Image 1: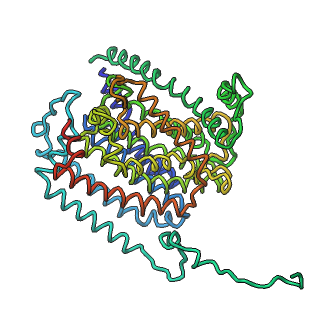
Image 2: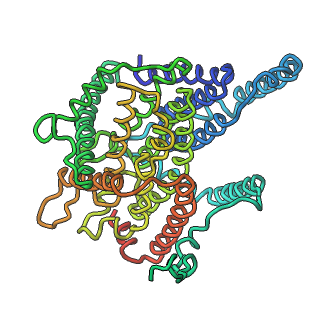
Image 3: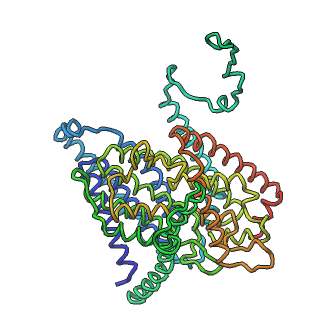
Length: 202
Length: 339
């Protein structure tokens, strides 16, 4: 057996196990940690596909930043699970219907001619000195510049929207202004009063 | 490639890894000694001086003590996560060393996206802290974990932006190529053209390793010892090890990206691995110096510094740099042209 195939099987088994863990475990923090494991394993599978840049970016962005924030929020929330489980049997038929629809769609799409092995031949393996970061950059900033910029603008709008939606201005909040603090002079804070000492000791 | 060939390659690689890890562990041990001696000297004390000549065997004694202590697992903790957390913080700290070029040829994995790889792995270390804080089922540990998570997210952005500046002038993500782009004399190293980014990078690095004055995740005067309050014996030692390995990592990265890696600062002395180690030791000294000098930041001040000072500074300098490269102004453009 090929060593690479062996590695692939191990990591895909862990990936599937972790993905199942995300939806079966009862504890939200554990579910988030399973998701981290799933991301990490898919990154390794991408690495096996020689997509190093995407693989490392997946770890950097999703595991290193997004999931840290996610865990932060999940740990802070005090989620009570029992009301969430109440409607389980009531919503089960609807849920099953949606799952069925997704499965049918996926089967049709993946069996379709456009995804056949003839259309997508096995890519030519490149040497170790092949810089796929450079190639991605070239494609993104030349051929697909317009799409890239549209995506950037959408993200910017999303950031502003998220801030605008969550920002609350409370008039009673006290906070410091460091720029004013460092410009304080002796005259602003200190008053020297000359007064006689107590008693008659002159 | 057959299964056996791959296995052979694996064994050779493991041997090479040991060649990096074992000296790294020794360096960590003696960094703790150096820290105690340096802080001792700054505070006009002697520091450790009982075990061995001038206390030189003190780290060995500490390791033996921690090895023989019992690893306690609190009753209501999540046992599996509690025990795996120290490993989660140690593994990325070691794995990142794979792409570090010690000299022109001495590098374990000369990968194209080395800088990204390092950035990805240094951002993973926070999981050890978060998982430890949560699994301990203790309020102090949990507070430490929360503080650490928020801090890492804030400073990672500034750190990432600072490194974007480096790859703009060097034109490469490969750490070896980044050093080669700094060839010339000491003024060709990136610390000068990228001075604000160098400062931002190093301070963010100190914050990222949870070292003083950014050690609010531990904050022994506020939350006892933060995320590792419930750890003892070897499990505690692993957190300690990870922290020091990360310190050396940040120092080594600062050397590679801003101080010319293995390049010699003096024209008539040849380049070599020795320079890399000397410069790393120089940067490490700052960590110790900071710890002995600065009081701990308040939490909101840390957040302010990360989001409102460092990120605008880096974005501003990236703009300056981009304009300089576009107008082909020295030294930014000349350095990029050298590739």
